[in-house]
Image (cartoon, rainbow, N blue to C red; front, side, top):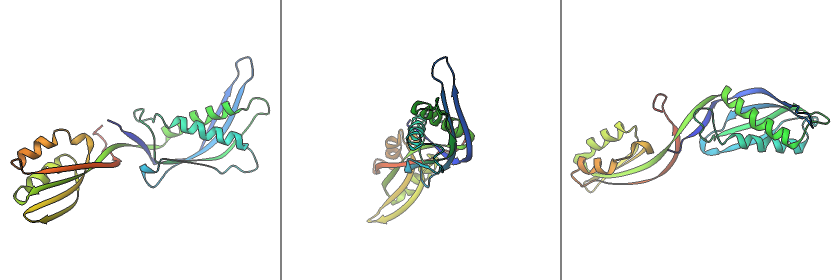
Length: 206
């Protein structure tokens, strides 16, 4: 199941310092990150810099963004991809000899990884839009079955003796639905599906 993770409540002013000394050239990068949710999990990832005074040079800002994108591959809830968030680089500092693209990319990756652990995260599951066409006398049974599958009915129209019900249902709950619909409607019900994006999975269901 292709779950995703998103930020429910973000953090501000998260400080991360990457300092490494191993005999040769050292690595130094210091970043301060704000993490906030976007309007929709479908919004992907946004990044911006609010650093003033050149405290983090532009080439290192790009490295921080690349590192943050690296960190999106695995979220803290279960290693699922992270989406629907914006990261703002608000401050940082460099070292005259030990700062580099590599150091700042590492700071972006590890800094955002730790920042996400400090956020309130939400597990997202794939949902589908289901359109079910059934005889009027079977509507009650079909609605009850959709409710049992955590379906959320979004519309219902009756015409020519048949009722068309539309609902949003978690993909994980649709296994075996064709067989159940046939048995609930004596073979007279039909349904179609299309992807509906992602929705928060209730706590305790994971």
